[in-house]
Image (cartoon, rainbow, N blue to C red):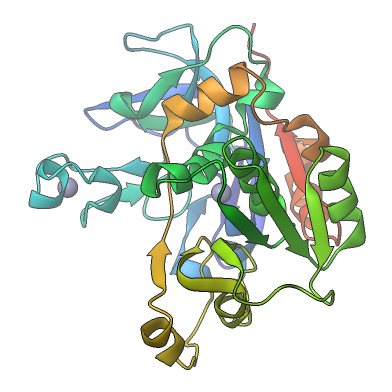
Length: 318
Ligand SMILES: [Zn+2]
Ligand SMILES: [Zn+2]
């Protein structure tokens, strides 16, 4: 099969053996995959990952109870046996592998092996180009899964990139007052076209006014900015990782009694519901598409300024 493989460098392997499914896994024939910031970080050495890249995908199950149906797959492969799993936290399983990120081959390939229990059937109303956004939309929906958000909450989203955009849409479907703060006029213009309020980071922003600030900047300056904008007893949500160590004056957390919430993967069932009912609009994010065999060009394109989502056409679902 064809695959985009990361080892000493990133390359296309057009003659890679199909993955051998482990006991609880089924093979999924990938139809569409999405390039994510994490893929670009992995190529730069993040997590030390080696293998087939890719964790945002939709495809057709080749075996198991969903054989022949379109499916998406949750990315954390838990052991379901340890204390953390038994406590109901499989996404935090210390024995987990993660599709295309940690010790498990990913979806930039004709076939991927996925644990059956990770799979969700895609409703007919959601085309592949939309279904491929299930994983990042689920990550966005993890915020309302972790926090009680009120209609009247004032929310600031820091970051106008791929995930910031999806989260802003999700939060705007819950609260009336959502402001996206970014650096890129063209990305902010896209959000404005979706009816969201935006501001530039260089604008005069009201300090200590937001009930919730979500940081998607992936930069060391994100958390200090969030702390400036959040009100006393407000909440800061960290949604992106920053490589390396950061220094920060932590005193404001104590003085202003600010709650800090880390947030990662989210609920696929809610994401499919949101996509099926148009609660989030993902199509405007698609900047470009490439055949899997042109995958290296796709990865390059995804790194260019102003580009939100690049898709890989892998196969046909019918
Ligand atoms: Zn991702
Ligand atoms: Zn476990």
